[in-house]
Length: 514
Image (cartoon, rainbow, N blue to C red; front, side, top):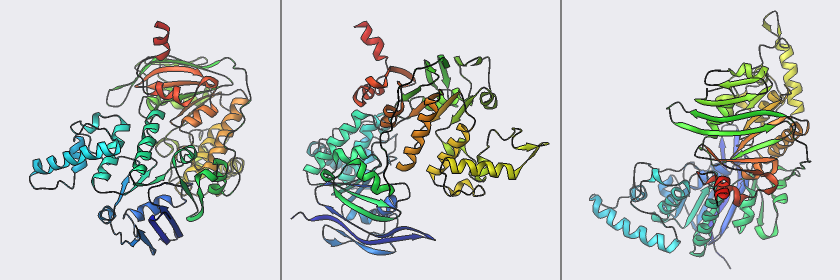
């Protein structure tokens, strides 16, 4: 009989009127990889925060390797053998690998003595768990996948026998994700228990032994991974059937709706982020831009939306030209039929202190449709918002509610409703389902396909390769501000895209030379 490394019994946690965890129980077998999934707000993060000592449960108990554990802070968690790799790494870029791993547990007032001991221990851990890292390398100069290894080594160095990973693949290429999974399987073989928190059902199916599903603060199901499937897990998460793969009928691309020629863009610090990018988007097609976050996609979208001016090159929407010598503001873009769903909905897409009805016309608020003699008609705006909320299933359907009080998925649907309501010729959409629940993802994807099927042109930027592959007609890959490949979606797969995502040279050009 396999013993449990971790057992949570009847854990409850309340924040004011919100019951974040309600009588949650979870048993994790020793030496297994156990997935925990659920929509945003399901209670996963709260449960893991209790387990790692960031919060204390209002009631319930925790047992670690059969012994009851009182975890009041992260040091208590470390002391009982629990380590955590956070979604956003807790590393000091200007420190070496060795310095980061020993930070806070130097082992001696004489740092050289402590570091010598740590170097020996780190070498042993690297061999034992196949985690090869140069101990003297500066962390800030390491690839993201290697930085993640440092985080894992840091936890193991502190004695972790239970390792929690929170959304560990969000910033990794497919190849780096494969490497991580090999590491997790190696950890499992060495007896380490892994708790994997992720929203990616493909990863759950690929690497876990067991999976637990949370919904609305409660634990609703436990499954052996080999005995379930993504469709069942999605239904358990949402409480209804979810279509994971939407139908994408073939369409004929029309005339050019967007042309980008040799575009170069610098950021606020003067660093060149977009380096001579060229591509086209036609009416009736979705062109996806794939790449690891931070490779120029944000700056590209800001230039295309008229938020920043290009250093050189041209952007054309029909007869509308944007260049360094011909600057265009976002309001002119809207008049030309260009809509924008920004990747950062809080910073750019919404004013969260405004009501839903005010946000539903944001950017279009000067339109005669909402104004009478220069005065905004609250009743008209409210009625319009109510219609949009019903059409786009925004919950709760209350136009007077402040946007800050809506979930991320409902905020995103409100932005999408606002932009698509204008029947744009071109839609620029960045990270359309970031932080969005699986049920809302299905809805948003269908609305994007509906626009494409009606002849609209869509430029889609996403770090989710599944999203790029399922929605796009053509795929462009960016790395280090350059286009490193372009191919039809029907010819693409994650491996090919991953190679392009990690290359700073044009793969197509290099193949032609060969």
